Image 1: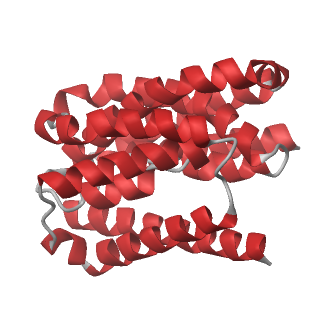
Image 2: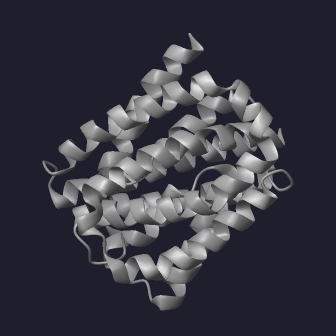
Length: 244
């Protein structure tokens, strides 16, 4: 039954990422954390995340906004590496709650349209890039912060998804070697679940990329905001439960 759940959630996560530019780590990590400890769950999900993201990048690469990518990419990679190294040490409820509060603000901003009126300067973009990479490496959730920042830039939805995908790929490249070195034995034992999640993620991504072109711009931005808000509510509830 767990393998079936992995397959279903992976397809949904891949489709979500194809439309919103994030979702694989956000949806699959909690599922794997139900069977494995969070540290290992983050490492497991990083593999299907990398493969599905690479596939998505190939299909949307011509829409990447290079200027935004450069602002986010460098510090996202550094943040991802640092987060992966801290994965085994800093993964407590306080981090979860802080992360949730950031997502709640970002989600509400997207749903209400406030994010469209915000303008992120160079310094803010660099900070957001570092934070998204850090959380991606540490707790497997980077898409919410990254997408919240990207909503403030004047880029169309195709560029939004393509640029978010390119940044996610950079972070994956930075954090993956750390997971493979530190947890290779445990990852080998979970090879079946990893394979199922990878295939499901690719199938969902193919579907999501096709759907993206049919969504009006304003609906797309509100939908991304709603996804971020839902993730924030979930993370806040999880953090409170951990404290209790």
